[in-house]
Length: 353
Figure 1 (cartoon, one colour):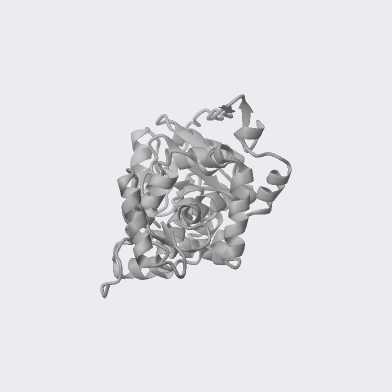
Figure 2 (cartoon, rainbow, N blue to C red):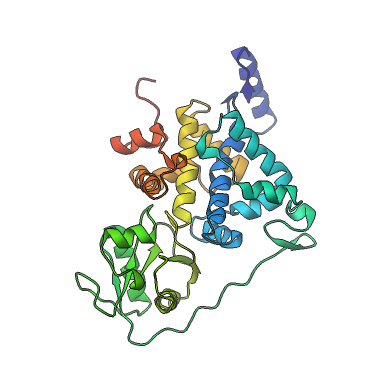
């Protein structure tokens, strides 16, 4: 329910009451580009496009990671194919332009190229996926290589919580571990970065680049896990790590080096976009989450999700993404930064209100 700059409050209240009478949930939103749902949705769509634009991985891999690791019903590319790029691209461009080129909302040239080429999605028979009628053609999962003999894995302690999670996963899968303070001469080093890329994590810890790979351990890893080498990682090392992570029956998605892997940067962008909507006063924090869950089908509202991960963790991811990319699109919203530093919920409004 959106009132204009001069709309009487009684009109908004009457519309709220009518929405409830017809069995829907009203969310009051200040008049602004994209209103609420389209604005919130920019977080996942624009960051997903940025990941593919950087050649980090393919669209279907982003979608699978967002479903299996982040718990979303749909990833950004299957969502764009469903709604149609003839809808998604103009909305993305309009919201970006009407916010006077806010970097967080910036589309990619790839989106425009595909739109002009008529690759609109299911309605045109081809988008980010191919279609057989209305059925999406899913690319096959790659087959994991055979496990190497006598290979040991050393796990970095730089992120203690994530390191413990990875070591437990490897032990359960019967993978041999090197428990030294530094990786042995023949051991493969595994880092668990938060926001930074594998290159930065490798250099920060002074690890041998040819024998170091990153594993994303922040979110769910029961079905799928993301493996990320740096550009210098030896191909045999990548295959050994892939095989080890697959031993527990998990699917391994191997991606190119990226700040925040895939799921971390996607989730951080979604949460940060919602935080800035709250900061601008476009909608109340609880209503932002209601709009995302009912309007976009998100499993949790983005502010609720930020609380579950930990606002301080989200802030660290964004600050590290800024370090890697030097891009203002990753600057943390003041709403997030203040609440993270104060130990508050992202759903909390200012005390004086």
